[in-house]
Length: 342
Image 1 (cartoon, rainbow, N blue to C red):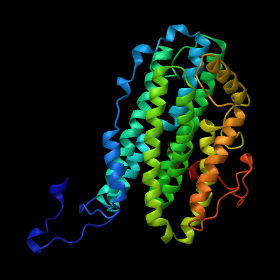
Image 2 (tube, one colour; image 1 turned 90 degrees about the vertical axis):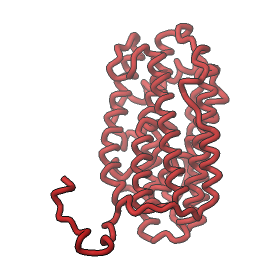
Image 3 (tube, rainbow, N blue to C red; image 1 turned 90 degrees about the horizontal axis):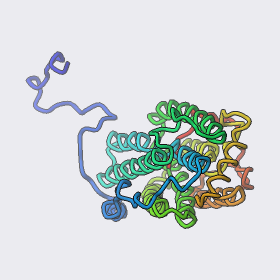
Image 4 (spheres, rainbow, N blue to C red; image 1 turned 180 degrees about the horizontal axis):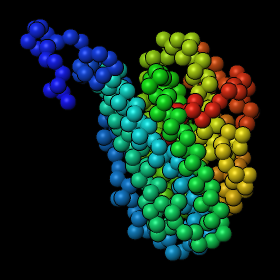
């Protein structure tokens, strides 16, 4: 109880400094003016998932195999987008505790708000397709639905391990290290969401993916601006951590953007076979999912774009042999090392 602590106001004119890190004292300094434009764009472009054209989305025209398969894709996305609001909320708190500029704090708030929309989009689609509010307690109606639900349970299990690791990692990493992880997610996400907006037939998916892609583009601009500010001053220790983090991030995000590496993700042997079959049903229904080669090319382009950014700051890039990129070999990666988000 605050009142139980000995009062000191009667013993000195001014209080002692507040031990740090702490959100106090507050200030509203703004130096990185480029971010003001991004903040203003986030205010103009804010959208409400519930106001998308859901009245055009008739789930009854799809077979149950198709419905369960499309819902599974959104379930994969939820592993990342449902983790993003608490991840960025943690980063937002860190910006306050480190007394970041006012505009930086506002930008991180905007990312947290955007990611909450992306999570809601996942939930709305899954609930409408399955007529049930979550994919785990839902009773599958088809064989592929049962197999994809097993996949989903393993994805959430791995996500839980990731979250425990994240909570332990955030306090010990600098914002500069976090930026590299965030940028990785944004570069990859912006590519896939724009592709899916162009390829999907359902109006509600087209509009949703288009808005999500625009959000991710703003998030990328925030991170790139902060990297431009901070990365010329990176310590060698931070550079080493970032190199390792990029490799870890590739392995983690591959579950949604490519396929989960079985030596890293703890999933059953039939996981990828089940997922590929589900993707076939989804594509037959007109729900665009990039094929294997397109996913691989997307990932390669995203990684090369990220490499181009880090090369400017003399930071080693890890080898990503899965997509043909050479670099520093990283072998000691565990789930606890990871902090990438969408």
